[in-house]
Amino acid sequence: MEITCTETELMILKKIAVAAAELDVETYLVGGFVRDKILGRSTKDADIVCVGDGIELATSVARHFKPVPQVSYFKNFGTAHIKVNISDNNDSSKAPSTGGGLGEAGAFDIEFVGARKES
Image (cartoon, rainbow, N blue to C red; front, top):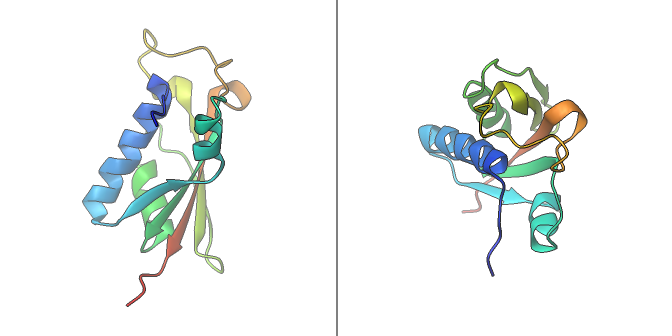
């Protein structure tokens, strides 16, 4: 099965991958993004699970965007969230219209959660 992502989605996923590699944590794209891609739907958010600290990963990912988005975190649950303004993080000559399924005014939400590693 082949899943097709937009240039914007690939840019976001690459930034997540780089941050995960820097922290040396296994990271997985899960949830509605995967479902929507399989069904050929547009996306406006992504859920990321890492084997480790989801808050630390979110903070690291945020630093790869300009301007750096605010990281909202929920320590009790070990989760974090960032909202990326796509128009600020894409070459305007390659940026798709915000009608491509992105959220409000070209925003893309990314949720992070950490999972423990079973021994």
